[in-house]
Each structure stands twice: as C-alpha cells, then as structure tokens.
Image 1 (tube, helix red, strand yellow):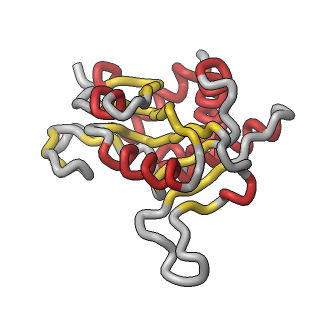
Image 2 (cartoon, helix red, strand yellow):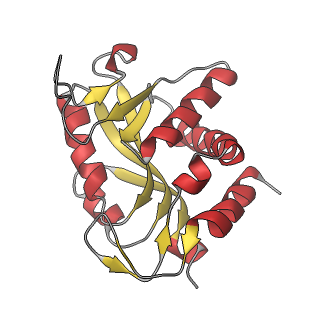
Length: 183
C-alpha cells in the first residue's frame, strides 16, 4: 500500500463521519471530515508529511516555507517541515493566527524570523469548502511581505473553494476530493 492509499484509508476510517454538521463556512452539510484525528496521529503525521512534501517539491519547487491558519494547518505544516529536515532540505513552518497577538508585537504570523522577506511560501489546510479561511490567511501572509500563490489541502469538499481561490490568483492543490469519501 502506498503512503497516499494508507493516508486515505486513515482519513476514511478515523476522520469521516456521515452526520449533519455546520461547517466553518457557515454552510450545513450531511458529512464531516475531522482531519485532526489523523494529522495529530504519529502514523498520519508521517504519511501526510511525506506525501504533501513530495507534492510541494514537485508543484511549487521555489517554496521557502509552509504554513496556514491555526489550528487545522498547525500539525500539517509541522509534519511537512519536519519531513523536509529529515530529508536534508529543510523548509520552515509558520502559523497564521486567528487574531493578532494581543501583546508584544501584535503580529498575525508566527515563524517569520525563519523566512526571508519576499520569499514564496505555500499555505496548507486540512479541509477546504468555500476557501474563506485560506483567503483570510493569504491576506495576512501577503501583507507580511511574502508571495503565496498555492494552497495545499488534504481534502477539497468541491464546494467552490477552488474557484474562489482562483479569483485571487491562487491555485488549490488537493490530495483528496469529496468523491473519495462520499459516493
């Protein structure tokens, strides 16, 4: 079994639920995918680190950092960053806060001291529906002086996120899609 196949198996068995929920986008859905059940697991973290890093290296080879909106992106960016170090070509991680830091510098982004200004970075997320949280994070990353044109997600629910990101000149790269979970 490949890393990709095993990661999908874990997401299907541990993260996917057929039930009515309200999503972060405000939409109602009859299914839910809680990727943190896998991204915070040791095996899941190792699998996603290898799989996502390979995609980033192939599709955005000039990426100098990986990060995204807290909380869903935190274990993903950490897995990718750690994997990159273990492979001998480290990419630092960064975190985009939900609110600016309430004291000290008042910054929106943690980890910028490890990333050269003007560098190309990628944004990661666990699940994308409309792309709203990615778009908000992209604004802060760009305002901080970085170039972000690519978002990588574990699961694209295929509910408009790709199109909304494209309007802002951003390409969405998904490891898996709605069809991989919902028949």
